[in-house]
Structures are given as C-alpha cells and as structure tokens.
Amino acid sequence: MLVLGIDPGTAVTGYGLVRRDQNSKTGPAGIGMRLIECGVIRTKPRDPLAARLREIHQGVSELISRHKPDHLAVEDVFYSRNVRTTLALGHARGVILLAGEIAGLSIHEYPPAEVKKAIAGTGSATKEQVQFMLTRLLRLKAAPEPADASDGVAAAVTYMLTAHMAAITNGAHNAARTGRPAR
Amino acid sequence: MLVLGIDPGTAVTGYGLVRRDQNSKTGPAGIGMRLIECGVIRTKPRDPLAARLREIHQGVSELISRHKPDHLAVEDVFYSRNVRTTLALGHARGVILLAGEIAGLSIHEYPPAEVKKAIAGTGSATKEQVQFMLTRLLRLKAAPEPADASDGVAAAVTYMLTAHMAAITNGAHNAARTGRPAR
Image 1 (cartoon, each protein chain N blue to C red):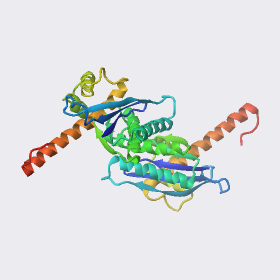
Image 2 (image 1 turned 135 degrees about the horizontal axis):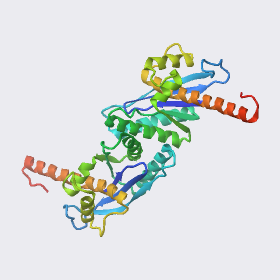
Image 3 (image 1 turned 45 degrees about the vertical axis):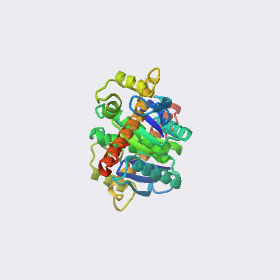
Image 4 (image 1 turned 90 degrees about the vertical axis):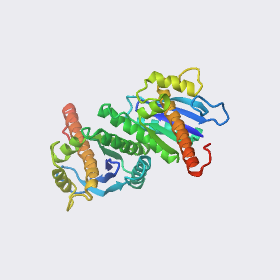
C-alpha cells in the first residue's frame, strides 16, 4: 500500500511517498514503513496565480501517474494565519485535491495538530520532535530533506498510523463481538 | 470577443457568457454587449470536498470547450468573511482558475467592490443597483436568473467595461503623443 502525502503551499508544496512494508522488520509504531521518495514542487512568486496553480496541479498529477499511490493524505490549513495567506493556500489545496480525485485516489485530510499528535503523541509537538519521530519511524539516518518535503512525508505517515490504529480498533471490536482474539 | 464571467462558490458557482457586439446598437456604456448564456453549477453539500471541486472544474471546463471564450473574468473573495468560508472559496477559485489556465484563456480577477464600481459607479452599490444596471447594459427585460448567475454575468461585464475604458485611455494617450485624435 502506497501513500502520497502533501503539504500544500502556493510557493512550495512538499510531498512524500511512503510504502507500507509488510515484509520489513516492524518499526517502532508496530508497522513497517519505507520512504520511497520525497521532494518539493516550487513555483515562481512572479508568475500569475493561475500559472502557479497549473504547475502544482501538474506536479501532483505527474507524481500520481509515476508512482500510482492508493491514498492521498493532504495536510489541512492553519485557520489562524492571515486571511490572505489562507485564501492562497485554499487555491493550492483545491488543485491538489482535484488531482487526487481525477486519479480516483482515496483522499484524507489532516489538520496540522492531528499530524503532530499521530506522529509525536501530542498536537503541540515542535517541528523538531515531529522530525525526530519521522526519522525513527522510517528508519532514516536524518530527517527528510528539504524541510518542506518533511511535512508531506508527515502527512503520509499520519495516514499509515491512523489507518493502522483503526484496523487494530476494528479487530478488537470484532474480537469482542465474536469472542475470537483480535489479530 | 467573448467573456466567461464566474462568481465562485463551493455550493453554487454562478456564470455568465457575454459577447462584445460590434454590430449591435451601442448600449448605455458606449459599448454593445449581448448576454449569450448564464446559469449556475451546483454541488451537493454532502459530497466530499474533492468530488465537489471536480464537478466545478469539469463544469467550467465544459463551458469553455462549448463556447470557446477569449477571456475568463473571476470575482475575487471577500476577505472579511469567516476564515473557514474564505478557505473553502479558495479551493473553488483554484480549480476554476486552473480550468482557464489549461484552456489558455486570458484571466482577470476582480474584487467585489471593483465589480460594483465598474457596473454601478460605486464600490458600495447594492445588489439591486448592480442588477438594475446589468439589465440596462445588456438590454434585458429582467435581471439575469437565477440570482447567483447574475454575479457571474457581472464579472464578465466588468471585464468588458474596464477593457473598453483602458482602450479609450490608451487611445487618448496615443493621440496626445502623436497629435492625432483618439478614436
């Protein structure tokens, strides 16, 4: 199972592709994950907004057609930023969600606090704490580079962890219902 | 010359197609215009955001391929609305601008106050004043229906009027420079 995680931005959109690895040694979260690729889609501030949106849309669409992920995990926007920034981010998120929808991916959106909580255990974790945990969870030698890419990777890992937790919870529910032990 | 005007919304996106009519009797603004079509693209509030964005994007793309407009005029967003609404509108605007950019249209964005000023002479004009002027400018028997479509028509007319004014101003500048009368 492959997940494309995205942290949207009009200037810099970070992404990370993370694969659930059934065969690898189970990681610290009780789930094997491997970082396949990460990076950023950059647009020029001088270009018109519509041209920048097209670059973001095409960049994400190309990642999808090259890697064929099953899920798209997109970080939500801080509502507390200034309204102009929020609006611009909304434009970028719009064309990213569209790319996932056109490709038929299952789409998941996570507010920043939820990403932090899933990865570092608390919604108020610092960027450094999140990066430290990402490095451990993915068995990397250093945090994903560039820094903007790291937030895309974090979104993908959030999907992995929450889907894993949901599976465990469902298993426990089923065990309680059927009397058979959860797997 | 044909202009597609759009008033973006996640629930209802209004649109209007207005043609500059060189042969028709000149209207009250010194420019002949004809309303070709207007309407709305509606999405279901229960559908996931990504699915609604796809419907809006496809709806606008279909209008473009059916009518082949030269320009896309998109109304900007009120920054004063609540941030959540602004963010959702940003998503819708993003996929609309993308549709115009992919089709190679020239794209123009107008804040609501600029639309009101161009059409009714003042940025603080009421909705009724704008609709009254639209009806006169386009020689209609009544304001464009439904009401949401009317804002899309207004965006298209704003492009017509501002492009017309710019042409007059340029003509006057050239006349001042060359000594020949402006046409």
